[in-house]
Image (cartoon, rainbow, N blue to C red; front, side, top):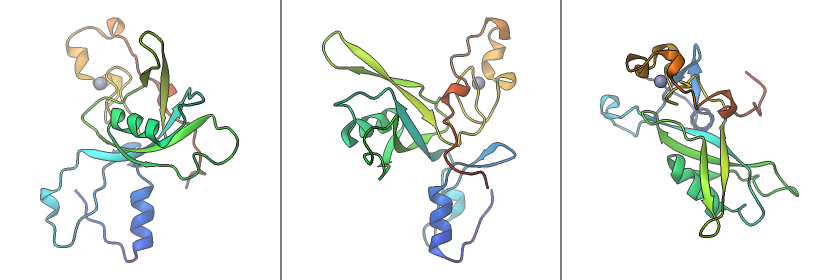
Length: 172
Ligand SMILES: [Zn+2]
């Protein structure tokens, strides 16, 4: 556990809005302390991340839909202010807080009548390493607990690099 001190609000805002951060490709969980708060009492089991929502259709591009997506993945935090600029976008961005003990969500089923449905696909921006077997951050397939149950060649890998969004920003 590390405690960082910032000397200007601009710096801490940039860090908190830039999550997730990594060290040696491992996720670094950050929480902002309130004044006088004891860091040992702060749970470090969730993080915020930008998620790109693909496969949108006309009539489904709204903040109401994005809030449903965010709350499906974890907890909706914000919708990107640039989501509705321009004529058409391939995806919309939603800021989500989610519990890192839970698996990442790949897609969400959208029912638009009693029998008809389609899927939204999710891609995560700056996603740190995660397990393609169980979809949980922090370990790779070689260290997945499911290997204790069955041999690796019999285990499905429903998760993969397709969940990682193409980088939008230059690497710094
Ligand atoms: Zn795993």
